[in-house]
Image (cartoon, helix red, strand yellow):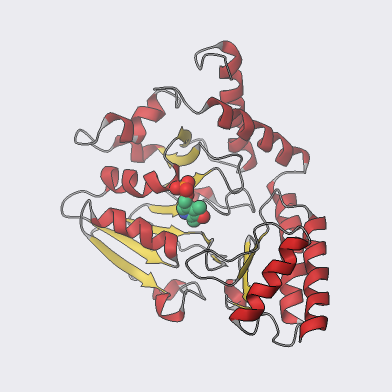
Length: 325
Ligand SMILES: *Cc1c(COP(=O)(O)O)cnc(C)c1O
């Protein structure tokens, strides 16, 4: 933590983290990996600043609270549209590919790959060629293999699947670095960070060191394909507890939209939700409360959550139901 970010020792860590990400996510050569700060939330502003020009429209697919926030920031910069939304369905689903309305003058199309708060996830991404497809993958990056070449830009705050908070990863296609950005403050240009290998200014060196350690761990696990296998098994344990509960636990997401990372559910009433959460807390389950904006329960099964934790939760859900239904 005391070493200069210009030191040889740090540069090795920095480059190793970039190389690991390229290898683990199978990132094509015409993409650059950037380490930024300000979280996914700053990306909500940084990307329209760079890509939303006069005469163009930023087109957003709304699948939850984070996509709404991303749209809100783009509105401050320029003209926007909603390509599709599942809000009327309480964000229980993901739009079908044919529901997505595209326009000739789209600056880009934006989606959120996993909806952390509502517990839904895209399984198949749209093929979009008339404009760059941009994705917020904060809560499912590195949880499964993805075809990077479908996207112009992918971004993710590190704190869910990549490491501690403080670094934001962006994966950007080279041609998007040729935009005229004379109007954009230097720190908010992707170019600035691409041209300097994310060393324009002091990067969050400790967060990147930890990111590199996490990526080595994923490598040791057998890579992203193997991690995905584990994630599917982990999530299945908890979804099975819901599906076999004869309606005692009610999943929020529609089955075909279910997230492998965030499993959202409710008990028959608010009183029961509270009792379940209190009992779970007593037994040592941490963070089972739903997001404060929606309530209920949410089990997050990020990469770092071990199988044993999911087995324990499944067992607790079963025994709690037998006692209380
Ligand atoms: C957590 C989260 C964010 C917010 O990230 P910050 O790094 O706190 O700005 C944005 N999008 C999604 C999908 C998230 O899960």
